[in-house]
Amino acid sequence: MCYRPPVAGVNETGWILLKRGTFLALVAGLACSSDPTPPPPPPPDAGPAGEDAAAPDAGDAEATCQDDDGFLPSCDGIDGLAERQCDRATCERYLRRMKTRIARRAIACLRRHIPAGDSCRPCAGEALATSCDDPIAVGACEQLAETCPTRSVEECAVLMAGLSFGGRLNFVACTTEQSCLHDMPSCLP
Image (cartoon, rainbow, N blue to C red):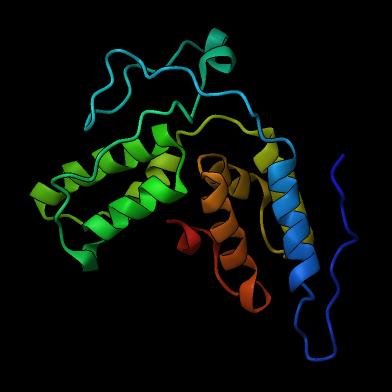
């Protein structure tokens, strides 16, 4: 059973009291329902730079949707410009902070944008928009919305569902720092 603390308050200086207790509670909320079963083997047609095959039918989407399939993509050949977020450091952030299928999609986006000289900034958001529904992310976002009332649970859940545990920690830390100053898209990997 997970501990759920009361909603954080605001101190006399206007800071939201999120320091240790609430932050740890948000982290515990993320971790409480994590599935300890190992991921299934990667699909046979998945390649290191390719995106997933066609999306599953709506009827069996819930049964087949798996964002963490264990097949890690590679950042080999990612050498775009850092100011366009097309560099190797961005790729490695995707690997650390996104679930594997979502990271593969984001890296495939990088590979499409680098030769064209385009900005890769939309790649994280586009990849996260394809993530599976995740009830754990919804629960964490409900707690986040209690701490930061201007946050949308729906928008948060779409973004957080495709993040790894470490990515979720960074996302929560970023979105709640400085009295919830940062908008959620700016806190993506």
